[in-house]
Length: 131
Image (cartoon, rainbow, N blue to C red; front, side, top):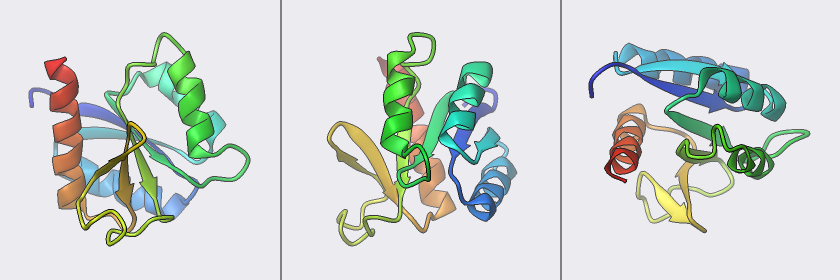
């Protein structure tokens, strides 16, 4: 990939965001922004226009699906690919695959393996570029 891609992580677990940001940026492929609430994530998304969003499903006040719905209604950012991160389903439940599409959305089960996440991010970005 030419140039580093901007990734927005929206997750209420501060430590998870810190380590995900650090690990993704250490690859040299990404610039990572983090938000701890759905509201902050929406604001940051509108400001930074990331190439891809990693969005936690279960968050207080505003869930991941609620955030996704607001993002999809905003014509300035509604075409940004989104991958849900969830501890609600396990890797075994999604067949051990690094990513699973459910209802037209991509899901990755926590805990996250960075190598698989990087491959998945690149795959989703390549698919978007091919459209």
